[in-house]
Length: 149
Image (cartoon, rainbow, N blue to C red):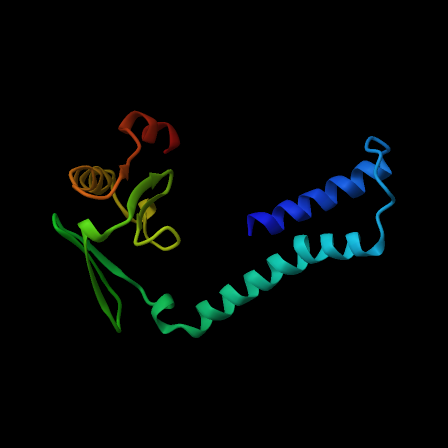
């Protein structure tokens, strides 16, 4: 994906550089315009539509979840499933402005929205996640978190 985006950026620099006369490059042909269009418009649209179709066709993804954080594991329960993950099997844990992210691998995470939690609950989640041994844990300190609130 990085290579494709890099090629798209190079095409953009080539086209803009040629027409603004700040790069001594050959005149872009129709192929450069087609490549730029495919990378910057068609590819993101196909990715979006694929993700949307997968979301709408999956009962699991659309279910309301009940997430229970325990000292030794996290439980995620939907209407049709129960997943239990030991903390030692978690890839990493991050806190950002509006979310706690509990990564199962480098691409997929369990999202816990802060908007659904009270300040007391957020502090309790921070305390529990901060005490977990195993995965890397990156939490916001409370003073920084207050500035984002």
